[in-house]
Length: 307
Image (cartoon, rainbow, N blue to C red; front, side):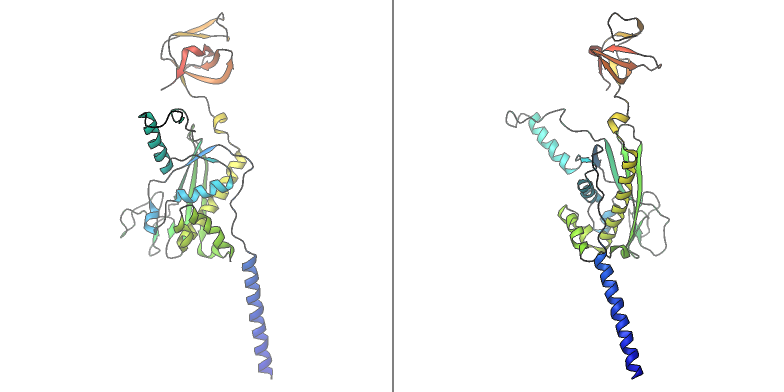
């Protein structure tokens, strides 16, 4: 009798534990892509030099990151990959006179990228027997030609990745965010299928349909969440935060003390002299600084963009 009671209590405890674990699994939702109330500028996503994803039978992480960017609404994406190649082909047709009149395809229409985002994997010391691949730095992994030892482990199903966000104008790094994930992080229950389904639709099916692909996805999302937090904290404005593009004198002229043709001349300027606009304008005059640090005004008609 006592034995049967003990067996009943054990069975009840096991059932309760199973119910608790199941309930927790149902409550745990997939991680969310962060959202922004405003866009911080235009963004191009570039592939890293080392194509580590080929050894995993994955697509370029560029497709993966573009999903994050589109969903977050933190940046406007500009295509510098296959989309640009197709656009250039259309522009070549326009330049050759093969497009219909009024097609409105020509120079000066492309939107500039304010930032470049590069997704890569973190370099780690070469491990023994862990089957790690990828890397920002490091030595070649023995037995796998052309692959660097780094932050993805096939054996333990872990990934350490990095996102580098660079200001195109100043080349300053706005954010360097590292993301980490492991197989045990993927206990998202039924919600995981819908989460990864979006990546398959965007041409990143390997990240959706393979275990290591899902781990890498989770690591990149971890890095992207941190990167967006950095951007929100810094609130950068690439156009406003950087100095104006340099200009040169199209013809000889003068650096004036005030924005007026009758103002005192500070110095003569030769044709081709390099000047740096301060961003201040009055009428037909720009305020500029020369190579010696002198500030003054120059008639806009005498200036052209530096080449």
